[in-house]
Structure formats: C-alpha cells, structure tokens
Image (cartoon, rainbow, N blue to C red; front, top):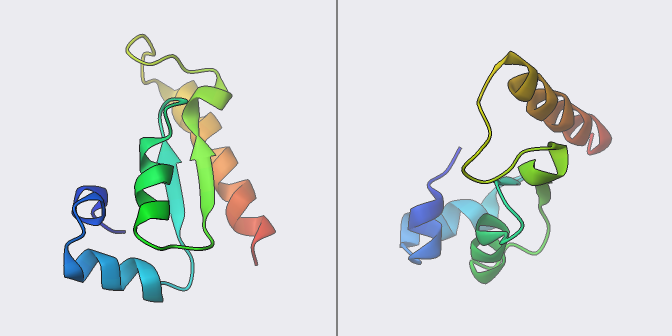
Length: 84
C-alpha cells in the first residue's frame, strides 16, 4: 500500500515505489478519477483501477455498510484474480 498524496506531490519515496511495484491497484470513489490521474502523472504505465461509483455508490451520499464493502471487495478480488 502506498500514499497517494505523496504520489500526487511527487515525493521521491512514493515515486520510486510506484515505478518499481510489481502491481498497482488504484481505487477512486467518483468519476473524477483523481487517484487514477495522480498515478498516471507519477509515471505508472500499467495499473489496475476500481471506480467505486461503478458499484452503485454516490459521492457524499453512500452509507458504508456490509453490502457496500462486499461489492468493493468482490470487485477487487476479481481484478486481482484476472491479473495472475
């Protein structure tokens, strides 16, 4: 796991980590895709991406409950399994 804020600010330790990582999974909450854009600007050429709003969430109005967590987990598990 890395620090997205450090990546977005170009801090060396974060930039080095993202460039040498075997695999990167980026999670965004809404369609603005800030995490994906920051990762791209950091120079990561290949990474997996989850957009939580595609799972039926709405920015600022989604209650985090077991059902929501299960959907996010299942999507993550699917992406990880596909990339093996």
